[in-house]
Each structure stands twice: as C-alpha cells, then as structure tokens.
Length: 346
Ligand code: TLP
Image 1: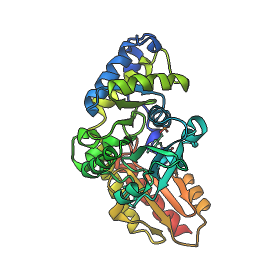
Image 2: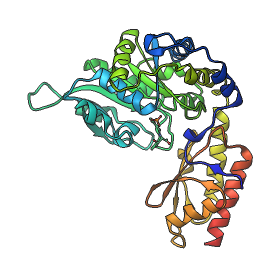
Image 3: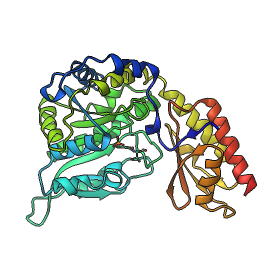
Image 4: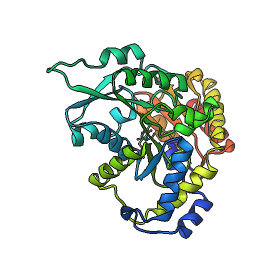
C-alpha cells in the first residue's frame, strides 16, 4: 500500500540529484572553515537571501536558538508571538540555555503581531523590568495556517524596532513558500530584518540543514554560538551538497505544493463532518477540524492510517496536513477519497 505522508514537509526525501551531489561533494573540515562545498552553500544562501553572510546549522531549532543567543544576553527579553514555533516547539531553548525571557503577544490569524501591541510591550528603563532586546517574527507562520507575512508588515515591525534600538529576527523556516505565495522576491521579505533562518530540509527537500543569515559581524558571532551548542560539524559538504541542489532546483516547484494544498482544502470543504476555513489556505499548510461526533479524533487518524494516509493531530479535534515534494496531484485525489470513505463509514 502506498503511504501518503502529509504530517509535515520535513518528511521529504532527497532527490536523486541531491544523493549524487552528496556522493560527489568536495569535503574538508568545516570547523576550520575548510569545507569547500559548505563555503559555497553559505555564499550562495547569503546572496540569495540578500545578507552579507550565512552559516549552516543542523536544524531550524538550532538556527533560531543560535540567533536569539547571539542577539541577547542573560536577563534580556524577546518579544514573540504566542503561536510561534520558537515559543511553542523549541523546548524553551532560549530560557533553558540562555536565561532569556520570552514575552509573548497574541498572533493574529494571519501570523502578524499587532504593531501597537509590540510598541506597548517594549520595556521602559526601570530596575524592575527585563530589558527588551529582540523581536521575533515567523514567515510563513506555521500555526497560523502557513500564512505569509508581507514585506510591508515586516518593514513596519523593523522600523518600530529601530526606533527603540531593538533587533528583529525572522524564523523563515518556510520563507520561500512565503515569497512564492506573495509573488515577491525573497529579498523583500528579508531586507529589513537583522537575522533570519531558513530551512533546507522542509519544502526544499534536502535531508538536513538550515541556514542562519545576517551581517558578516553577526555571522562571525553566530559561528561561536553554534560551537557552544555543539553545532560545529566537520565534513559538512555531505549536507551542503544537497543544500545547494535545494536552492538551485527546488524553489520553483513550491507553487505546486500550494496548488495541491488549495485543491485538498477545497475538497475538504465538501466532506460532511469536516470543517475548514478555506480563505486561510495560502501556502502548503492546512488545518481542519473534525466536527462530527460519530468518530473520535484518535479513531479518525487510525482509520486514515489504515488507508495509508498520515496526518498530524494538533488539537482536540484539529488536524494538520502539509503538502510537499513527495505529494503529487494523484495523492491529493487519493487523500480526498480516503477522507470521504472514512467519514461515510463512521
Ligand atoms: N516545524 C515542524 C515541527 O516542529 C512542528 C513541522 O513539522 O512543521 N520554525 C518553524 C516555523 C518550523 O515549522 C519548524 C519545524 C522549525 C522552526 C524547526 O525546524 P527543525 O525541525 O529543523 O528544528
């Protein structure tokens, strides 16, 4: 039976070309800065994203942590969304390892945080308060239905940050999905932030790796922070080789994932017992709810699993589905058929 794995775009397997690039990669010791393939990837990534320099890290989680630890000292405060991946899903790394204080503000349904709420949250100079140091944004916003933040919004936050001598970090794990969905050059989404990460291992299908991007000075410091976290790796050309193919070849096709997500979402609107807010589907992430009480959520997942469909439960009766390189148009049809059958059989 064919397995259709919709749990995440992290499940993507490397393409044949990536496997060949891994096999052929020129290698050296990256802690000495001597891995030629990694050096090439870091240069490429920085140019593509419009920053002076970049740094390969093993994961998005480490990338965000490296950035937060590089920007902030112990006792300083980070303003971030209450639905952000960094707040919800990164094991509290900033406070566990950095003594950094997260100050959460509500994410709006489109993934933004209201400017006036950010402005009101920035601390004044008072001995009672932690010092605000950084604002973090997320684009696309995973928990907010993969919503893309616009260049205008990001620039607005950055302008506010500048006025208060704060920095802005962007968790751009899926930044290319945002650029494709908005039809803008990715540099428009990154031009005003001080640092960002993006992931090679999600929609771009590389097996491992994320890139931290910023000024040369910031990246030099981030390299030290990465070492502290044990993220200084050796012959990383093995990872970078696939990463280069991800940047060269895998971006154009992200629009297919968005079309497949849209078609899947439209199909779900027609299935009795399931509910979806179709207007919110703009990239490759879908959330929908089970509204029928004929089926328990756990049973819903089990029944779909028996038909080869894997999805993620993300709330009491809420599910997440993510389209990606491993999902073709025929898989969208098969998923809709399975969803219909499971609901009819209930
Ligand atoms: N997200 C994963 C899970 O952790 C939920 C997923 O399947 O979506 N930022 C964002 C916005 C992310 O969605 C993720 C991964 C990360 C950072 C962390 O990346 P990794 O998994 O490489 O540490």
